[in-house]
Length: 204
Figure 1 (cartoon, helix red, strand yellow):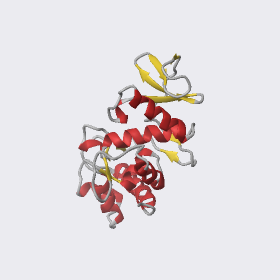
Figure 2 (spheres, rainbow, N blue to C red):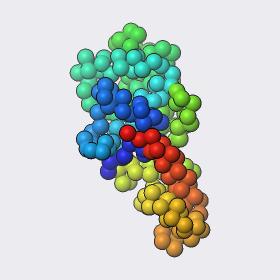
Figure 3 (spheres, helix red, strand yellow):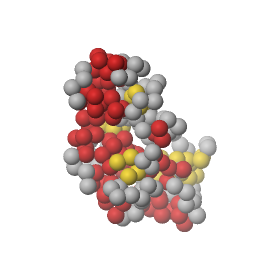
C-alpha cells in the first residue's frame, strides 16, 4: 500500500511544501518511487518523526542527526530508528540508552520517552492527530491494508466510506453498504476525508 501526498501530509503532520522540499533535498526520498509521488507507511512514520522533531528544533539539526547516522553506517530506512529530542539535540534511542547525534555525538544521556505517534502540534501550529487513531472511530495499523486508515475494528478503508457520505448517503445509512460501519465511523471517515481534501488542495 502506498500513500498519496495529501494523505501523507495529514498523517505525518508535514505540509505539502515541506514534503516537496524534503524530497528535493533528499532528507527523505519516498520508497515508493512513482509519478505522481507516493509514500510507503515507513515513509509516513519517518516523516512524522521529522515533523515532531521540527516542532522543537531547527531543521539543520535534524539533517545533522541523519548525517551522523550515515557516518556510523546506520543506513536503514529512517523509520527503523527511534529518534527523540531533549533540549537542543537529537538522540538515537536504543533500549534503555539515548545517544546524542548532534551536540555531542556518541555521548549517552538520560532519556524520557516521548511517543511521536501521539497527538502533537507542528511548527505551523497545526494539530497533528494521533497516528494510531486519527479520529476516534478510525485506526491505523501497519499490518492492516499496509497502514491505510480504516474504520475501527474493520478492514473498511476510510475513503470508501467517505465517498459514500460525500456522495449523499447519510451516515446512518452507510451500514446498508458496510454492515460493520456505524454512524460514528461514517462521520469520522467523512471528517477525516475533508481534512485530506483540504490539505490536498495544496498538493504538488
